[in-house]
Amino acid sequence: DAKTTQPNSMESNEEEPVHLPCNHSTISGTDYIHWYRQLPSQGPEYVIHGLTSNVNNRMASLAIAEDRKSSTLILHRATLRDAAVYYCILRAYHGGATNKLIFGTGTLLAVQP
Amino acid sequence: GAGVSQSPSNKVTEKGKDVELRCDPISGHTALYWYRQRLGQGLEFLIYFQGNSAPDKSGLPSDRFSAERTGESVSTLTIQRTQQEDSAVYLCASSSGHWGYNEQFFGPGTRLTVL
Image (cartoon, rainbow over all chains, first blue to last red; front, side, top):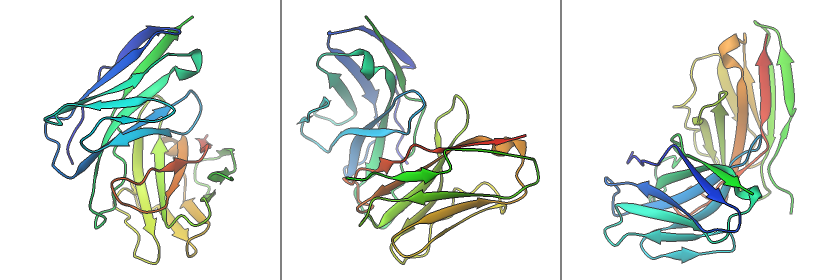
């Protein structure tokens, strides 16, 4: 399975944008890039995913590099509730495999008031 | 609508006892996953069910662990002869399929403590 690399931790101030980077230099052409986050004492929750083009939803934006070897999750205005561990995960397109999520250590985002 | 639910939310047991953890997936979701999260660590995959296909058990850490799923509904994860290293939060997730674009919906987890 292709691996991802993320910084262990990041800090942000409330109301400011946050850019969470992820490197995935061994990504294959059919891997989707998924982001999940885990708030304290909760199960992970889906944030966003993309394949090649940048994506926006109500929670965040996902910017994918042209060569797809890196991506950035963008929270446009951080709130205290966004403090969580953010996981960048690659997921194969084909349905023949289990397609389980392989979680790395993620990025612990701290948001200061 | 209703999300993934798990029960019990907390379970304390003595070493050597058997435990059963339950997961109710979102209605209509064909794929169901079990993960384990030890304190301060990331999630580890345990087992996966997809419809009536044979489950993928490749993540089960030992033969003390087993899981069942009835059709596309409830799943139970059983741990026999529990050991202290089994202490963790056990998370269940379901999705409408197992393709790369399917998101997984997680339950709140069961916190298992083995004394």
